[in-house]
Image 1 (cartoon, one colour):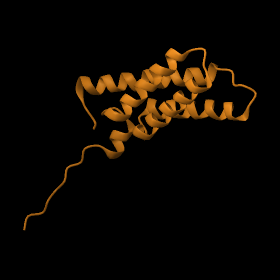
Image 2 (cartoon, helix red, strand yellow; image 1 turned 45 degrees about the vertical axis):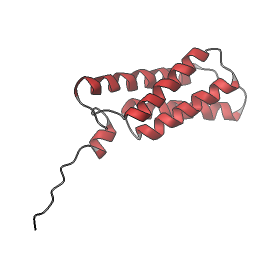
Image 3 (cartoon, helix red, strand yellow; image 1 turned 60 degrees about the vertical axis):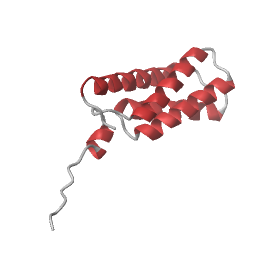
Length: 117
C-alpha cells in the first residue's frame, strides 16, 4: 500500500499533478450564480489538497472523482481535463498514496512483535 522507490516517486508525481491541477482550476474557475457552484469549487480545492498531501487518499480520490463526474454531467468547457482528473483520482484511490505521504507516516508499515510462549 505504501510503495517505495520508483513506484513511490510515480505516485507522488501523480498526486502532485492532479492536486495542483484541481486546486488551480478551483481557484481560477468562475462560479455560477448558484450557491452550489461555490460549494463544489471549495470541495474540489479541498479534495485536491488532500490528494496533494496524501491525507485520507482513498476517500479523497473517490470524492474528487465524484466531483469531476458531476462537473462533466453539468457541462464543462474542458471535458478532457475532467476525464483525466477522474481517471487519475480513481487510479490513486486504488493504488494508494505511496511512501511519501501523510497517510504513510500515520498508517505506514509497522513491525508486529509476537511474544513466544
